Length: 342
Image: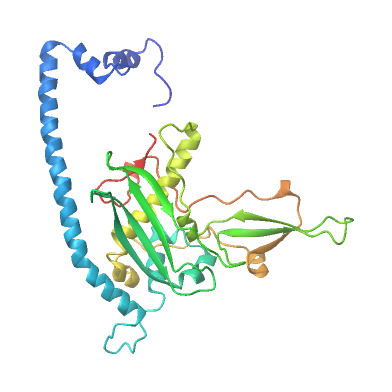
């Protein structure tokens, strides 16, 4: 709704009748006795429903845990076959090179995030697994994705992790998302562009060029998720909407990897799992020829700062306004999480 209803309008009068400015108890008390009796009966039914729902969630969690144990040996075998360490007749121990890169590229949700300079880095990705995040009492409250890499010339981490923690009290509310800090090797960080600004003509010849960095779109920004605002944080509506979209898009990628790619990886690799129509690669996120010629993300910048192009848009595919409309895979509780501040 855009702004409050006009003073004296039918809408404003109806809002007043509905007691939107009163507490739920005050509103129920304001009802006529016959209507109040019916509402109390409805509240009793709701209590029964919530009792059943609690039991459903408990049994579902137990069922999920049971089948995760049954799936686990299959994933271990899959990892060995992909790596070539599990004997397969006729395979000659070669495994399946670049298996997970192909899986990520054939799903448009993850492919949208992968840029030119990410491709070579992701050839070193050897496995992706998902594990539940548990409370001290053993209740599920999110999930953790672990990406395993071979030794590579880009970073020193053996694994990169992304964790989504949901509120145990309020199902569907994302409390926070955390990612591993990537230890990039010198000159190999694909999430930034290094800008060199040459000294102006007539200046000191021994003056060193100014160097600054600029964030660029990259799959590896996935491990630096946006912060979920706290309940007491004051954020402008426009900024909140932008942050909401970033959080939704980030969760959509994580949930898609957990719910679709990990369980059905070989179907994505072969293309069987591609839904509707194949993903078409566009020009978004591509680099111009000058960028490629410089190498190692270093660029000369002869122009003034005021003439620079604006920084690239954060994130991959934009999220939709409401998480419930985002079409994303459900979290461990079977619901789509929302940004904590609503």
